Amino acid sequence: MGFRISRIRANRKPPGLRPQHLACVRGAEAISGGESEGAEVGASELRFRPAPVKPGEYLLEVGTAGSVPLLLQCLFYPLALAGGGTLTLRGGTHLPNSPVYHYLATVWLTAVQAYGLSAELRLEQAGFYPQGGGEIGARVAPPAQPPTLVELPARGTLADVGVTSFVAGLPLSIAERQAAAAVAALQRRGIYSHSENRPLKSTLSRGTAVFISAQFENTLAGFSALGERGRPAESVGEDAAGQLGRFMEGAGALDVHLADQILVPAALLAAGLLGETSPGRTLFTTPEVTPHLTTNADVLQRFLPEIRIAVDAEKGQVSVERR
Image (cartoon, rainbow, N blue to C red; front, side, top):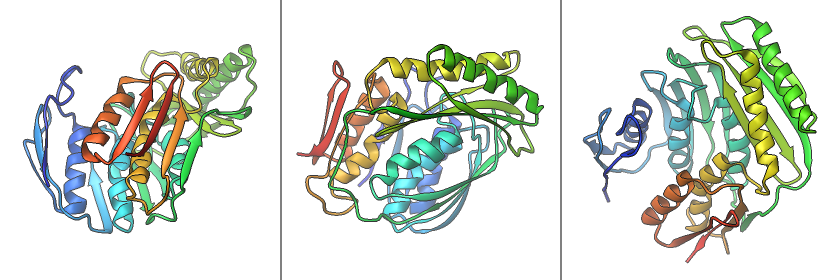
């Protein structure tokens, strides 16, 4: 059964499909043999007619510095449900307004594993804006036995904070400055951390990034910041540290990005698509209910009318279950 999407990114600048979104459409076509109409950069409307997904090996290129992590998140679930496969995805791996590779490989992957889903990820090359040229490899496994219940009402005690500072095609001293600034900014907030400086392999682009992972008693959160021309290295580290600091000021279990992204496996679980489970319910809290989360919840319920996603924005509580 096909579907139509209109007013795509109508309130964004620029509106319409961007290259990374078009790559998701082309990727969905590639793994399924589905067909689309109107799919082009800048389009405000498209139609898509899906077909059965075929397990296998796929090589896909965004073509610009479009987000490879977003493309992976798009293709991961249908490929897993079809029995698994291998993806080689080329484009940007560390971009603004997108999960960076290291968030994907740690925080997001840990979350989906709670639903019996898994993949082996590897970063072959880093790709920064605007040149791109990065590559991610993924071996997607078929679903394992799903849980009956996923409850994450509280994050619990902070157990460990790791700061990793990356550079690609630039002196390692920049990574050292980024990490030192992040560690110092966290310490001023009473958060103690350990740091690591790492070069990233890249042939086409140069860039820097800081990724902070925060392991709590019950959950894992991640925060990242990217360097750019003219931006001091210290500012990058302080930016990432500030994100963790603000998260710690709230009471939510999941960071705002994971709260949005976990809705997909939660909906699949509630709908029984990961295997028959009862009650197949997910409950979590987040410091802020974002428009991304509420939009994602609305879209998922349109495709899976048998599920109910209840969002209490005041309390930051979200539940996903079968009607």
